[in-house]
Length: 222
Image (tube, rainbow, N blue to C red; front, side):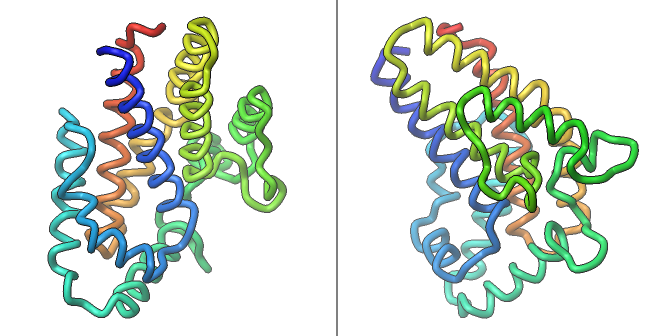
């Protein structure tokens, strides 16, 4: 790829990671839903992802958007909020707990060793989550936000050495953290979600992150 194509790809990747971060970290709003449906975000996805999970996820999301074009978005938001809370927030047993520690520790509790390792990764790049004592650092949405920040830093890199370092850090974070629990997390969402929206998001996240990891490993920048 030439420099312009690389620049465009970085921008698109940052946008996708930011979208995934917002979608999993924050509860849905009617404004967000209206934007997603009206702008046909899933029909006109900015990357051609050669990954079946991503393809299936985009098909589900596009289908959901078409079915709800004329639906009252306030009512639709209530439906999505119910699903979001049951999956990720509570009260009660969570159907898809959004924290790495829950999936990677025997105790299946938050603030475990993976949380501390993720926190150390953030600090290495001068980043600290302001709600770290109430929301574990290894929340999926925060991990997506961190990837977006690494990409942003890469876009601003002043030399090849810095750029190579940031690409290696993205690979390491995906490999050592995100991809270790992504499949189980996405599967829990797909099995328990009551809406096409969150099932589609789970498949899209699974497919895109798998694609992105492979793409980074094959990068000419390393």
